[in-house]
Length: 120
Image 1 (tube, rainbow, N blue to C red):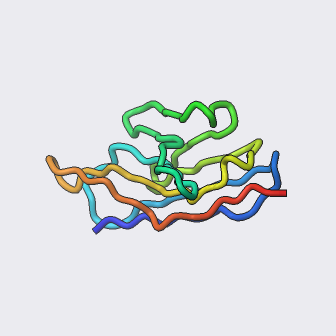
Image 2 (image 1 turned 90 degrees about the horizontal axis):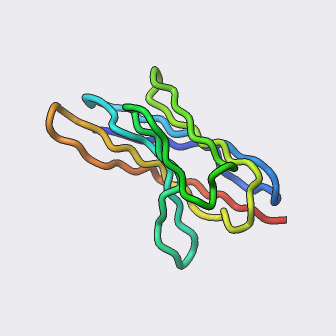
Image 3 (image 1 turned 180 degrees about the vertical axis):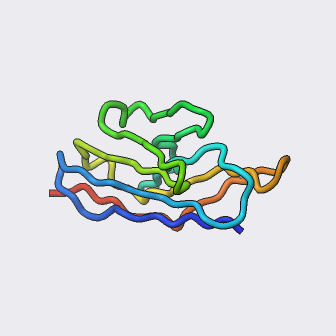
């Protein structure tokens, strides 16, 4: 069973920074990609940033230049450094991992979510 454990998040003033981390643990074959999604009240969940284990990153347009996703391959972790935060970044942030559990079967896994609130 794969588990995702998130850390980070909290309350920050506009213009401030936060760092989210997510670690994948359990028994699996290999990671395809890990990333972050967010869901604000009354809105659909949206992609924020993803890191493909084969190489390459992807960002939602509104966070480009402000957020940076990175990985720790040895620890099966991703980190999301969020700078220049805006009130519209307020949401619950969810870690996502797409993982091969064996040679042919992959699944999407989700963390429990962590609240990010940007407010003065």
